[in-house]
Image (tube, rainbow, N blue to C red; front, side, top):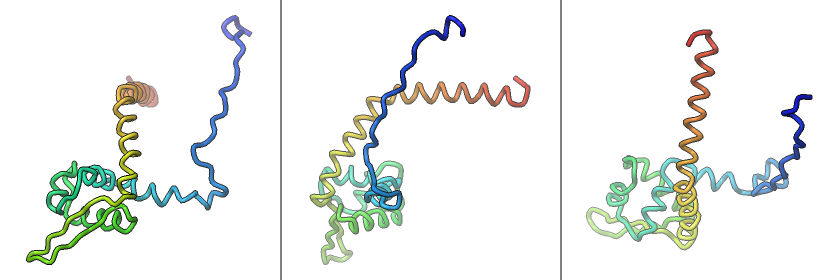
Length: 148
């Protein structure tokens, strides 16, 4: 044994999972919610509607990334089906449609804000980890074929 390996190591403490399901098939209802909120547009729509009632075109303009009319329609329908968004149609010509968060939808905004705060706080560490990974991966690729 070398002098450098004389230190006593202790195992890392076991961390309990955030969510524990009884069976793998159970999924604790998490997958259903994550499927909705994990899509590309739902969180953006919830964030924009957190500020108040918006008409369809106004919502479309505010959503970052240039959401298409069709995708916005699908997204707000899904959020409405899940009880997060309320859709109001006014009998005008052309029909005026407004969207707003329900009480359930508003309760979600606190979680989204926490996630946004976490991402802002950890952005430098994530960028550093990515750079280190990319540098190490580039070195591995260069050495794999025998060239440099």
